[in-house]
Amino acid sequence: MENESKRDTPRGLIFLDALTALAVAGALVWVIFFTPREAVMGDVQKVFYFHVSAAWVGMLGFLAAFVCAIQELRTRNRKWDAAGAASVEIGLVFTVLAIISGSIWARPVWNTWWTWEPRLTTAFVMVLVYAAYLILRSSLEDPETRARVSAIYAIVGFVSVPFTFLSIRLFRGMHPVLFGTGSGGMAFVMAPKMSIAFFAALISFTLLFSALFWHRLRLGLRQQSEGAERASEEGEQQ
Amino acid sequence: MTPDTTSYLIAGLAVIFIGILIYVISLWLRIRRQR
Image (cartoon, rainbow over the protein chains, first blue to last red):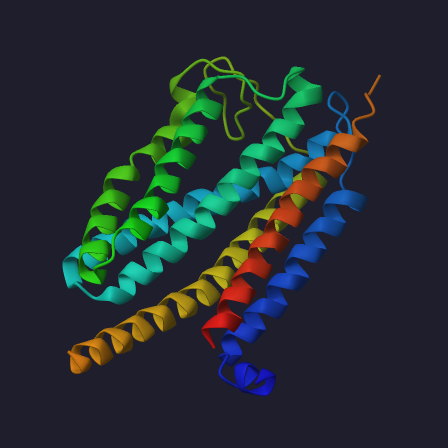
């Protein structure tokens, strides 16, 4: 059984898994041991590298779901529906992790776990929007209806993503701005070793998204074909 | 003086990596069940 499952996993996916594991481990080691301690915040600043990477993967997942939704409506190919569901699931997991890790960073820096400032509020709303996507999917039994309704919802719900991304520039808030300066928020300047850590974390998490997406898509496609087989068997019995 | 915020660093990294691990395990279990 175990040999069988290894045999049907594509070599490219096995290679991507190994590369991802190495990249994530390398980024973690670099962040912990080779980046300097930030003078004002202390060690907790190092959470930032993986916090931003997790938030990036979250938004990447929602962007992928948006593209898949358009393709689903254009082509009516159900593979796009499986890809959209996979993207949202992974995006939601990483966005929640970004919010929780951000809250832990905020406690010593802002002296509070949570505040309803623009970025945090819009990110929270974005999580609710995509959690509702998964609830909506699970409540629809007919695969065709589920694919179409989910695609329309993913397109409409995507409004929350650029809104969250731009919230630090559109509104006055406390959240730091990574590139340039926001309206009232603090800008953050990185030393060269910090920049290496930032891009290492970002690239490793992008690889992680790709690997997880591939695995999750394969599962979704298998569930689709199993569902279709079951439906045709039931049709024959009737 | 730089504050000692190491415990927050450990908590932040633990949340992210344990969260990813839990998702990977849940995905692996679903894939196994599907086979």
